Length: 132
Ligand code: CO
Image (cartoon, helix red, strand yellow):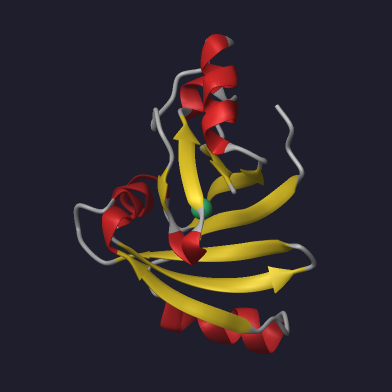
C-alpha cells in the first residue's frame, strides 16, 4: 500500500466546545472547520498540524459509534487516518492480505474525503482509516 502521510488523528470528545480552549489557547492551533457528518452521527472540528490534521469527534446521538467509544474507553485517541492515492485499491490490497474490513467500499467522510475503516482486530488494536 502506498501511504503518503498521516492525514489526521481522530480524537473522541464529549464536547467540542469544551475542548476548543485547550486546542486554540493552550496549543495555539486554529480550528478552521466544524462540520456535522450525518452518516457517522458526529460533529467534527479540524486543526492543522503541519500536513496532518487533528479531527475532534463529538457524538451527535447516543447511538453514535463515538458515543459508544467514549462510554467504554473514555475520551481520547479514536483512530489514525492514512492518506492513500486510492482508497478502493488500498482496501482490495489489504483485504487480499487477510485484513478484516469495516467498510468494503469507500464512503463520504468529513472534508469531502473518501474514507474506509479497517477493523482494529486486524490492525494491532488501532482503528485505522484510509482516506483520500
Ligand atoms: Co477520521
